[in-house]
Amino acid sequence: MSLYLRDAVVVDWRTLKFTPGHLEVDEGESGGVRIIQAIPEKLGADDRVLDCRNRLVTRSFACGHHHAYSALALGMPPPAQTPADFQQKLQHVWWKLDRALDPELVLISALATALECARNGVTFVIDHHSSPHAVEGSLDAIAGAFAEVGIGVLPCLELSDRDGVAACEKGLAETGNRLASGKPCLVGLHASFTVGDDLLAKAVALSQKYLSGIHVHAAEDPVDQETTFAYYGCRVVERFKEAGVLESARTILVHGLHLDRDERAILKGSPAWVVENMESNLNNRVGFFRGEGLSSRVMLGTDGMHSDMLRSAQAAYFGGIDPERAGLTEIYSRLRRVHDYLQENGFSGDGENNLVVLDYPSSTPVSAENFLGHLFYGLGARHVDSVIARGRLIVENRRVLTVDEEAVRAMARAGAEKLWRRMAETA
Image (cartoon, rainbow, N blue to C red; front, side):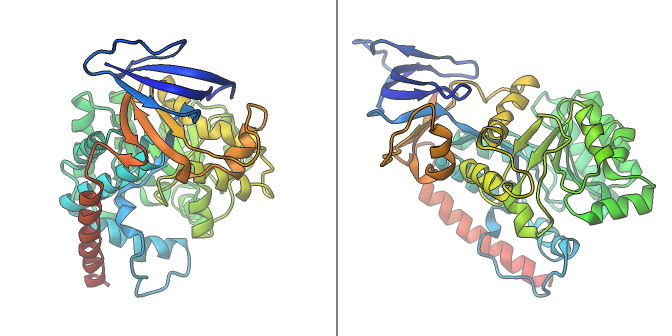
């Protein structure tokens, strides 16, 4: 089956070159994309033509770090006790939320997240999940929900000592079962300050056994460095290096705000990746990301704040103007490096046949020379008209085709009320 995009303005996601014309898009994991002179007069029974009417068409977006389990937190009541710092915010909000999740809420959260991703032109997500009281089957449920919407996902299950040995063992088993079955998955950890040496060693061993990588928060707040040094006599990145976390090109360290010069040098010399999450850092008041001293292996995520990568890129640029002074080109590169991570490590589902059609009626000229100016200062999720994932049209004229949007939203609203009640009961 082929999908034809008529009268598109194709924006090469690497060079930003503009090419007016028609596109032929093949369906499937390895489907190709070609600019053609004319759309065939005779089409196959399953072929489709999408009239782009000179709209911009470019590679769709991917998210380097998400928390689908937080989807039902939007608008929830504030905690009974106002957090005084980052660690209290974890204790009174996020650790209460993840403990209140059951299998139904895990599934609903994943569906709601995938739906929002589709609407925002995000067709692949690297997710970091936590539901210590609903571990068994959680990774397959998340992957199934994303697949139902048409979004690719690389999941992991966050492991931590904070919920006891039994929860750790269940998490290791859940992760190991998925890896053993040949399904894509990373080995997730919360952060150094909640992960003891035994769990860290088991997680690294599991990752190495299946040639996977570690997906872990690192130096998001000073408490991570302070606790790690107090317990283990070293800093976070030094501990991870010693444990073998940094040996895999599939490893992802999230945040990386409170790193010293030596830690940055260690990361620069490793194949590991770092994910910037500007809005989450601002929300948690933990600091600003700085790329100095790191390699180019930095990509962007949302940290569960939302599912809009255009918004994340804009926040990374504007929030980093003073502390980092990274230009438009560098932040755009971070937006697109998620594709590099997935391709380099052989994860499928994020090929060239993942596209977004942007209905962007600008009042000023748009060209290859000024496209980044428009992307950071003008473009938004409201301009996402249609979305193609693995060569398949999943959003057309701002309407999701793969699932019943209203039904998913109704489930999410009911699920949110259930979740909020459970959290209130444990106040």
